[in-house]
Amino acid sequence: MNERWTWIVRYVLVIVLAIVLATALGATDLFKTTRFGKSGLNAARLVAFIGYAGALLMFWLLAQRAARLVPATNSHWALLKNALVPLATLVVIACGQAVLLLLLGPLMNASWRQGYNWFVISAIILSGAWLVMTLFTGSSSVAALLGTTARQSR
Image (cartoon, rainbow, N blue to C red; front, side, top):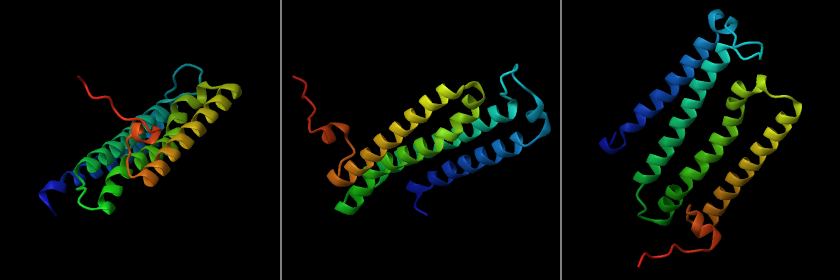
């Protein structure tokens, strides 16, 4: 493997380790029975949230770093380079809603849950639109998507 890309193995190892530890620790009786007040939130949900959220963060950082290192030598590589971060953002938001519910779920009533669901749906639609526009325009820049250009400093 090219020395330039060996860092991917470290990121994948951290992601897998975070998922395995969160799952293993969250399944123990000690973590399941330790509660935070009368809210229904327990240590198992907290450790699962920390592990899964950490894995999602590392996945997003992996995509961001890969996007910086992908060469834009031709149009196919340039399209991949620009689409990596929007695609990773879509995946993180879609998976992250369930991860965030691990922490917030026991604390929400029905109306807060409905508001949360609509917020996540909006975020998924926006990130999906960002990805589609990136594929359409070939640029992941939000300024390019809005049709504006950055002002040059004088």
